Length: 324
Image (tube, rainbow, N blue to C red; front, side, top):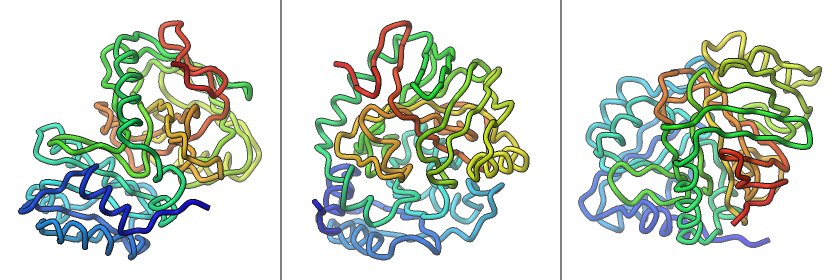
């Protein structure tokens, strides 16, 4: 199995993708489950480059508050030039309103490594050619920004349509080297929030998903941008019904993303698969990161296999293959 050393990957992340400079303030947000080896490698490389590293530890959060960083961390980020989210049990650094605001103001650049293990840091999608990946992401985004409507279908039965004109198209292909930049590692996707309240149709989830993993196939009925019903008798369907019943606004259709990374493996891990080339993920819950108004305790990605994606009737992905 191909694998890179953590120090080599830290040099890539800190030195090239985030481009940390001498004298800068780098914040790293962790929780009790974060990978210590990843934290140490990133911190050591940043310090060797002359940056000052501050590690901020999130307290445990119940599901309804998964995206709540808390006031101490929020205030600390006001003094940071760059941020790495390294929490393992939550995606809070990626979806907290303060991070979105600071990036929008050009005061912070952010690299998400949330909910990722050491394998995500050293294997699979982490080994991609990131300059080439970013260039392709920009080309797809340029086409996407001209579109008014999107449609996603899959052999499993997904048929989701939405209005998208005017919404921000986000290139997450590893590069966040300028103020306001946002990316992830491992990375490789282009994504967008549908216009709020416009998504219609059904989503058949046959790939892995955030928090509930891989397993039973289930169907979501979507009307006016919200999940109205979950069909399925398995554990994942039951788990999602519980989240929708207890977490306000978790029913919101928050994102549609297209994976571009050819190195990502199909291995049942949603963090790996959602970046996989030719796969699509649909997200539920919080959409602040994408320019929306829905603040929610969760942002849940659901991976779909063998998708075909049309932008204004032009296919950009066909049966799981990204078209030129």
